[in-house]
Image (cartoon, rainbow, N blue to C red; front, side):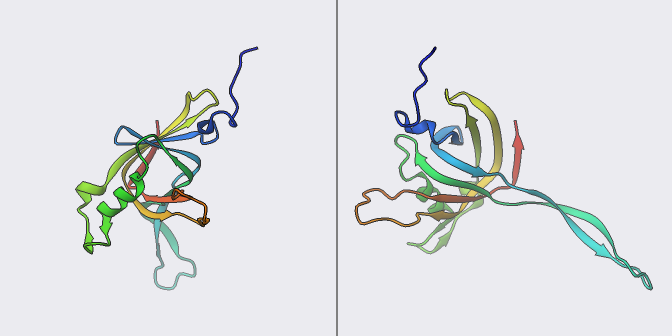
Length: 156
C-alpha cells in the first residue's frame, strides 16, 4: 500500500485550492465560493394587462470568495499589495483598471496535488480583505477571506 502523507504532515493538503495570479503561484486556499451568473431582467407590462412579462437584458456575475488563505512561498503580502493598486489609502488614489485587473486561475487539487478542476477568471481585482480576529500571540497577519470582483468565470 503506498504511503500518502496526511494533512498533519503537509499543511498544503488541507488547503486544496491553488490560486495563480497572472501565472504566478500566489496562495493555497481551504475553500472557495464560485461566482454566480445571473440574467438581468426587465419587466414590461402593456396597458390593461394584469401580469408583466420578463425579458433578459444582460448578464451579471457575482463576486468570487476565497476563505482561509495560506500564502505561497515568497508571496506573503500579495493580497495587500494588489489591493493598494486598486485604491491606495496613503495617497488617496484610485488605480487604473489596466494596472489592477488581473487574470487568475484556481485549481482544485486532489490529495496528491494533481488538479481535478480548473477555473479561469478574467478581470479580477480585490474588493475585500478580511484579516479576521488576531490574537496577541499572532506574529503574522493571517488572511481569513478575500472577495474578488470578476468580469468573467469559466471552467476549463
